Amino acid sequence: MGEKRGLEEITKMKPMICERCGGVDFKDVDGYRICQYCNTNYRITPEDLPAKTSTIALQDDIRLLLQKCKDDPANARRYASLILDIDPSNSEVKKYLK
Image (cartoon, rainbow, N blue to C red; front, side):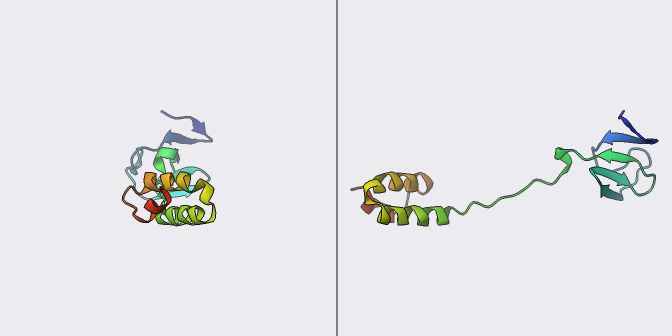
């Protein structure tokens, strides 16, 4: 099923249950998940890793763009348009659209 690494089998990690012994206790070492009962190695793939989360602070972007509207009146309409793309109900930006 997998490649060979030394004498131990390497397979792509599917569920967190060892296919050889049914164990559920694993240790991650150098890109491999190793069953603590029978030492079977499973290669860790990107699908096995937890999903990364990110937070987008839109209010900070809006605040920055509003400041640019004040500091650069020649381009205020452009910045105001960007703000409305982020927050169409923003009432503070309307004074820069005149």
